Length: 102
Image (cartoon, rainbow, N blue to C red):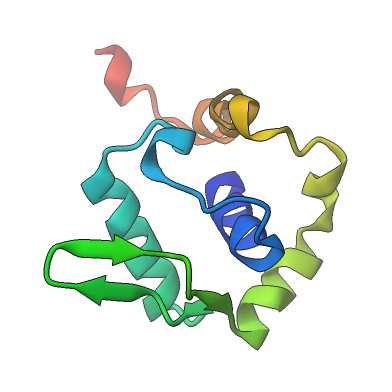
């Protein structure tokens, strides 16, 4: 949930444009995640031209804004950009089934 919250927050705030490296994801993983958010109706106007991908024109839908409002507890611990990878690890550790450890 933290990755989704963060991506939506940054798209909404326009503080910076989130990218794959902010979350320790590959470019393809990040694009697939944004596509998921778009298909679920949280974000719109994601720019795709051939192999190019941009969140600059993207904006949240009402559903995306509601998700931010419903999860406003994250704002208290929300880090600066350089610490996002550490911040999202909480969810990874909380919801991991330990499959990577095997």
